[in-house]
Length: 238
Image (cartoon, rainbow, N blue to C red; front, side, top):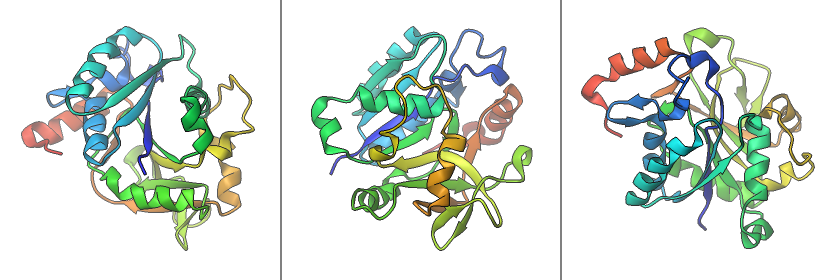
């Protein structure tokens, strides 16, 4: 079974200004390429070649990314949300409604990754998770990372393989898997974030989770980007 991936990239990057005044945040460079290109290449290596990316401001700057992605075997679909993005929940729902009719009818699980994350996570490890979701074992899956200094309280703990809000909490990484059925009642055109909407699934024990303790960075400010560039230097190889 071939699974689709989505990269959430429509955010305005307000905290990253002035770097994002004329450039979408995922197109800022780390090493010799945009952040999102690292994501695309990692997804393709793992077998995720059908990738949807939602965009917003300066959407035309994404066209070279699409061309470069074709060279590494990716089939990129861009969805421009205009100057007011749909947020994470709305963006996912919009993606589902733009799938070809035959893909909508199969109701196949899919992977979602945040476009402002830099990580060496192996997306191929999520294929068995997607198969479990497809079989009805759970409705979603969260990859959790170590808590960064700016968010030491964390978001979710893991108990018996399931995500929970109680316990020693880890950071929500922005890497998730979903069954499309969980979005069927979300109103068309909604502009909301995944949370608190998804908390009901967590409370019902319908979300599995795992901890990824290696390289994971959420790049939200110019200082965080500069720090990542300095720490990685010429060592980048994924």
